[in-house]
Image (cartoon, rainbow, N blue to C red; front, side, top):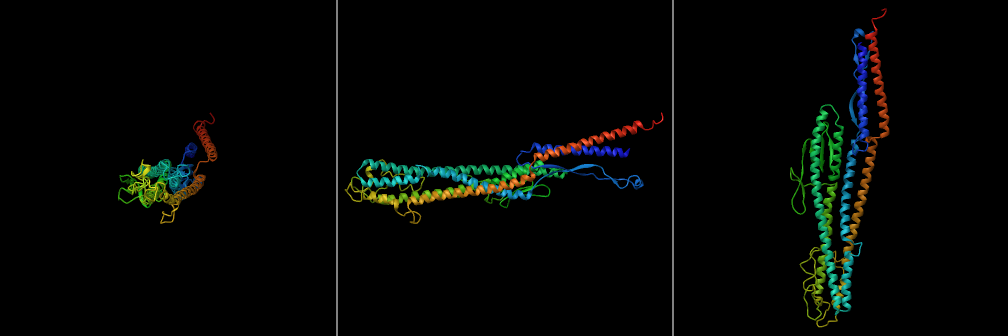
Length: 468
């Protein structure tokens, strides 16, 4: 009877093992479209054989197998792909974020439309040229003031818009820092759970999937990298500085103020990511936008200096020397440039003449109109229009470069992800075939139980009644 009972035990283990395999397959099918899920498989092996005493060697030679057991639930993984994928992903996100900000800046400058600053500069110089032809025409003088006002407003608006964009990026940076700290805390909690499950001899596959997704998001945000320890813990770092070690997190902090800086809370060292969304945002906020603002400021400053220098030497319509400014000399930035109170709403005080008591003299207006062609920008190598056109052109090149690099890195990340998914992703056709295989094995095991039951019934109820 011991052999028959062994058979029942083998059949029971087979049923339980195939049932586990079916449940794992069902879990795969249910998560076929779950982002970040990695296929699992019930790994079976033959159970330890039963060794009979040597006295029965003539009856049962060798060892008898004891059926099948599920050793572990395997998770398909390609860890050597993960680092490459996350690096490409973080670089793509960094360039994409930078390109997005640059597109906002491009829309603010609006050089492709009629309201572009180049058009305003051309209109301003044309206004001086028109006044030089008829210096006594009050309509032309008023029109020139309108053109000057439109030019200063255009500079003011662009500077204000760039400052707003810069502040918006600052808000996004603060949000990303908070998200990094939140994710770090979640990873630390998952580390504790994963280590506990692994120490109990189980495989925390779903928990590891959750953690991998969080690490991927950290890579997008900051270019974070992770190293998995033997006990299952993930050691996460950014730029060589630890963010998560086991259950411990090293959080980021920000300074207060208009434009916050980021530092490590524990040691006070500055945080300077080389990849990821934060790198793109910091590059846009601290380098690109200030560079464009600085260019506008230099344009406004030279415009004020050059125009006022000529205007203050000319004569007003009544022939008296004005010694006054066309632009307010204190407004030497794009944000503060404006018409001087000397001429604002007073078109007769525009100094169009180079001679006193000569209302028809428009030579000073000619000199001011000729500023359009003078090399007064960038070390006396460019005109006002050429200088600003170059700034806009460089912005366009920066946009194309950022978008091209973002696209290139995104293609690399997608290619790596596709290669990885070919191994770790769920194939529904394969799962359907496995399901049928496990189902048939389960049915065979149940049939084996039926056979064992019939044998036991024959032995218990049919033996010992022969001849009655």
